Length: 112
Length: 182
Image 1 (tube, each protein chain N blue to C red):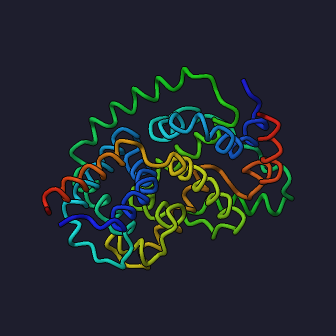
Image 2: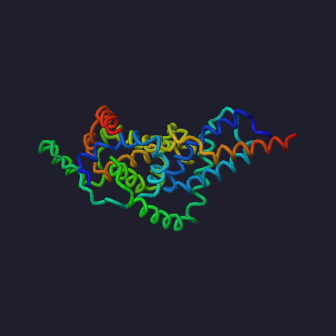
């Protein structure tokens, strides 16, 4: 079992580091792998001072949370793009290049 | 009418991003690839209705999204069943470094309402402008903006993220960790 700290640091390097040989599996995992580890605990908000911690608690109890900080938005965006690019970097599977080329040549035949 | 070479290239170059979008909609790679295939067949059959000079990607994304919307409800149950099966088979694989948190992110994304998820993907990952995303989804620009905002807020809630530190080390540290892990 990997420690929590260890895991939380690994997200992006796993995404990037395994690109070349694991891309297909990861794309599959993205789609299918759901509902596990829901019980993982998150880091406590230990570094915050008491007022900030109280503010966080209050924010959570409200149904409409305050606007996200820029840093959080940036990190969410990074994760989102990493996941997306993982598929994009797989390029065009043969199935689709063949399909497009086949249709193209059919059309040319029809045209002449 | 024969397909113009530039049109063929434009379609081909849109495929990788089209797949990534399809996977985010379907939550299943095989089904996503079927969706891409059906999208391409439709697009190429109607290539004459594509207006040269406009954005080929946006045109293809629109076709894909509409096709997904019209077919999705019919096939939903079937997909859920196969997803359950594949999730089981994945659990037996050894955990990769950092895999768990990556999985958490995917799960959180999958929990978003579909209109929020697609808006977030189109703007945040596919690189479309709010205007283009609105065109693809057939709604107002303001609607896309509010969906994207709600999606981000909900994601942060689901991931219990209060500050950037909750994501772990910054990019530099990650790069060092990644090179050390080779």
